[in-house]
Image (cartoon, rainbow, N blue to C red; front, side, top):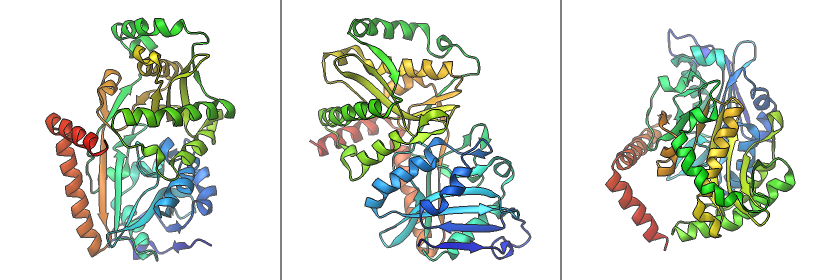
Length: 397
């Protein structure tokens, strides 16, 4: 049975003179033990991203995290009435002699953050965080460092409480497209860009059975994923890139999450597709929450139809679809690829926090912080970015 640590005396954790709203902290060693609390927090009363849904991270931990020897460390802080204030979906692993806790999900979430009760998020203070950190320190797993990366500065208009504390800019930015309430699709993508895309789409529209659709049935989801896992390795090999989807547990994670039910008759990962009677022309998968759509992974055909830019056509359809549903934001994930800037003109501010909990952790935090700063400096220099891409391609030939 997974361990649960309870801490009731906030005076033992908060610094002298500080008052914390957190009066108990429970730390669970498995997602199953925290499931009921977690699902109860996936409501509008709590601030969270779709990447921190239980079904998404449970699928990742079961199929990918376990292969990486990630041990769940689910932290739940509650108030005097026993109501959850925050859930931090963390996992710990030992690296170079240091026990490090990170957000679950590995490289797959674009954004990492806890699930915060909205009223608490607006008023959380350092004493609250100190109380939670002290509980983690007291836990039997002896965590040396919290490496909390790719955190959004704001979510749904609310400041991320951890942005008040130790932080630095992340190495990469996240291109963002804002979609004002009541906007028409033509207001979001310029008419000139639309004309260029429509000109490319004319050839595809002549194909029998051509259509854009959101895969909703298990059969359609499985069919599109079968095509993805066939085409994607070929695409990556053509670019001299490693097939990251071949890593242990990744395919099973993606298939499980895409088939898992989400609120409003959706899926934990939604799949958008262009197809005709003969083939899947393009697909792009992402997570959606009723307000924000964040894209994750994609591929497109190896046939002659690839020359008509089906990926761009698919993205236009996706953006139009969610604009009509009243969504207010769309993003294409971390990175600065040219096609992302064609659609996304703004950036989502993202930060990292390296919080040491021991002497070993202080040394590790210094190293990680310096490394991430260096990565950011490289990313800001186009010549160094080009050199890095050439080196990566050469290493995987």
